[in-house]
Length: 349
Figure 1: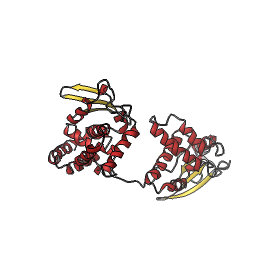
Figure 2: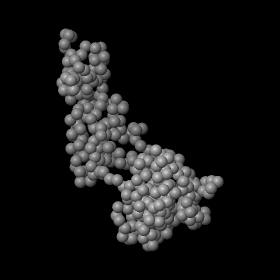
Figure 3: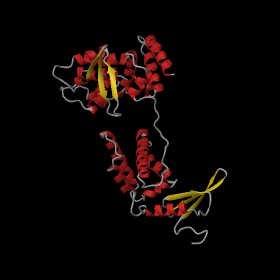
Figure 4: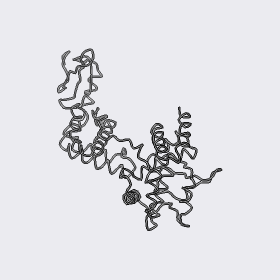
């Protein structure tokens, strides 16, 4: 091989950078990039070794995008949660169907970012779906890089359409009063426990009497949260105590459906939504938004701002914003809550 010869099939591309140019070397045209250099003709042994490793990887005809998606969906990288697994499978299969005839290595090319954006643009009418498509595609590609099936990809930090700050969406006292005035007891109990604990719907539906612990000052709930697997110790407020103590004798589940049986996450959220609409409350209100009310309750119960943020899975700043907004729309609590919030912010500084 001559001094300036490259291995047969190598595709070389010059790209302008600050202060000059850099050369990018691909195992073949459209194949994986294996080397970047300031020199047009690299001569290091490592260059030839990298080329040999790149050509030893699956060829485009052998490793297509649908196979890559299949490999991911059957890998240990799949999340444990049923909802998360279902979402990944749905979007992964959509991704595979769109790129059914494309070799996986196309995602090593910078232009593939535009291809992925064009694919997810079909959901631009629904910002949440548009963003979910990109998030799940990037997750699959990240896995492919980690597993050595791709050298790199260019779909990191795709632009997002859905931007919302729900810190100002909370169940104000007037909302809860209107809701409780017409809702049946089993639904009132759901909203009450959500507002007092800040737990997500899935964790609410699995709460049992067995999770109650005695403390020197009263009682608390000991909960291992489903989403992050964290252990939360939640003070039992007087309002929450009323619900717990009204649980029928011999029943372990604190919350049930209308017939007294196991409550599903969907039924809990749907029950609150139905009676919210009957009470003619804002359609922005969801069961999940009861967590903002709970943040204020937990501050009043003596938890620090950092503890509340950790329990909710929020940033300290977001938790402070939620509590401050709640105080402003709750005249009976404004002064006391804002004083405690100021003290909590001082302690977190």
